Structures are given as C-alpha cells and as structure tokens.
Length: 329
Ligand code: BYC
Image 1 (cartoon, rainbow, N blue to C red):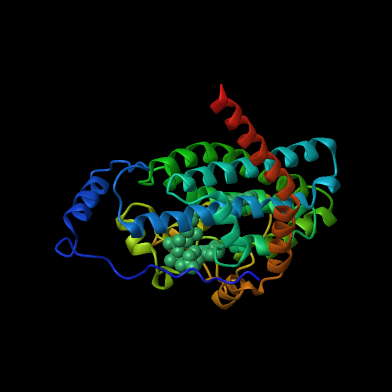
Image 2 (cartoon, rainbow, N blue to C red):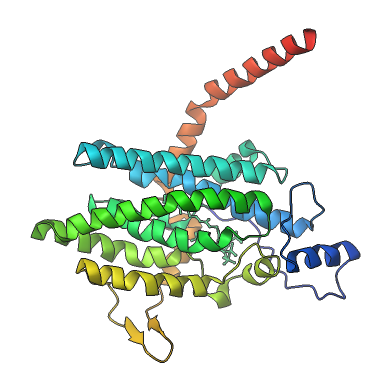
C-alpha cells in the first residue's frame, strides 16, 4: 500500500533568539546565499527535510518510468520509440543522481528504497494515474515534465550543494523531454479527427493531476515556511502552480485544444490567469494510497527490487572479494 506515514516537520519557524549559536550561524550562511555541503554542520531538521524531499524526488523519477515504459513496445514509429526509450532512460539517470545526493546526507539508497516499499516515503502523486492512449505520452512530456521543470528550475538555486548541482543537469534533460512531448501533442492535435480527439482526451485527464504536482495550496502546505527559510524551496506551491498555468494555457491554445476548466480566464488586473483549483480531496486520497495505479506502481517496484536481489548480492560478493585481494597485496 502507498500509505503516507512520514511525519511532517512543520513545527513553525524559530525566531533568531530561539536559535542556538550554531543555528544562527547556519541561517546567516543561508541568508548570504552560501551553499551548504554534506560535511558542514546543519540542523537535524534541515537534514531530515532534505532527505524527505530528495528521496521523494528520486523515487518519483524511478516510478515515473512506469507509465511511459508502458508504451515503449507500442510506440507508433521507430523514431518515436527511440525518443521514448531515451527519455525513460534519462529518468533512471535522474533517479540515480538524486539517490546519490541523498546519500551524502547519511542515508543509504537501500534504506530509501525500503521506506518507499513499506509505504513510509512518498513519490509524486502524478504517477498514480494511468497512460491509456498514445497521446498520453505527449501529455506526460508536455504537462508532467512541464510542471516538473517549473518546479525544478528554481531548485537549481536550492541551498544544499549536491541537490542544486544534480538539478542543473536534470533541468537540461527535462527541457528536451518537455519539447518532445509538445511535439508529439502537435502531431496528434494536427492529425486526423480521431488523433485530435485522443489529444483532447489526454489533456482532459492530465490537466488537474498536473496542477496537483505542485503540492497542496499554500495554506495547507506544512513544510513551505521552514523549507523556504532554509532555501530548500525557493517558491511556494501556489506561485509555481500559477506560473505553470500562465505558461501552459497559450500552448494549449496554439494546439487548438481546450483546457478542461470552464472558469479559466485571463485576469487583466492580476496579469495572470484565474483558474479552478484541483479537487484536493482526490489529491489526498491519492496520497493515502487510493489513486487508480498506486497498488500497481508499488508492486512493480517491489518486484524489481526482489528480482534484483541476486544481482546486488553478486556485486557485494565481488566487491568483498576484490577488497580482500587488494588488502592481501
Ligand atoms: N505528490 O508541505 P508540502 C518528474 C506531500 S518527478 C505526493 O507542500 P513540500 C518526472 C509532501 O511530501 C517530479 N506527495 O510539502 C519523472 C508532504 O507530505 P510529508 C518530482 C506530495 O515538500 C519521470 C505533504 O504533501 N518532483 O518530474 O514542502 C517522468 C505536504 O506538502 C505532493 C519533486 O519531487 C505530490 N505532488 O512541497 C516525468 C520536486 N505534493 O512528506 C517527470 C521536489 C506534496 O510531510 N519536491 N506532497 O508526508 C518539491 O519541490 C516539494 O517536495 C513539493 C511539495 C513541492 C512536491
């Protein structure tokens, strides 16, 4: 089950007077825009928050391969298959950089995986939705990777050095992912009436789950205040959601597709689109393990972990043998 037992650390911010001298010095470094490196002193809450966020991010990259991997054997042309294979392979790479960044904080990849499989750690809600038709692969690239980039570009400036450096490389690859998705959507939207219908259907199903990727509304977000004070997060959930809507609506118009929100409207005074909030009860149900694919996603990860045990054991045995040989020399 995909249960969410990780205890939130949203305990409220400490004032400068309440901070210990180390905490004050740490906060001064953050405020001065310095990067924090793994061997530097850091508050326990900072370490825990990073492990939670980077670990969740890494798991999302790995679980995120599943809905797209579903279409590799059914891609309509050799070119589309090659593009999709490359993208899915990139996501595996992103997961690995992120697990490495988390490991610098003193947690092993095995621990993180075990926490995922036991339901103690999360992955992004978006990957609990199925990819039902080929246009969904376009929608995932356009909307899901589009939302991911919106969130990850600011994270290149996050205060923890290894996370920020991982993000720089990941963002370069994500922008290719987003463009291949938009290109696929363009082909579908300008294709036969049936292809256009599929593109619209994909947009209808992926719009609100994509908006949910940014997390709950700011008033429900337990971690934002502390994470922003530590510059782990640079923007609030609602700020990024608004930027995503503002960027994506003209792209949908260019495709000739309709965003499934009757209340979507440009607000001249605000200089932004007004839009409907997602159904937050659905979001929290997905987080509790009750989304359409939670069970299948975790089962697939569990199977992969169990099936790979012999290989991990082999690597460990080889490493032990090799280190014995080196010690004897
Ligand atoms: N799904 O206080 P809040 C990708 C949880 S992969 C699930 O606002 P925070 C891609 C949150 O963890 C993209 N859970 O939290 C891959 C917290 O629960 P806990 C993944 C969510 O951390 C392959 C609770 O709700 N990107 O792009 O300050 C193919 C309260 O929320 C979600 C990242 O992981 C969610 N959507 O802010 C294609 C980016 N939202 O832990 C594409 C890095 C919230 O207290 N992460 N929760 O039990 C972040 O930027 C932040 O963690 C979030 C949430 C903005 C997501």
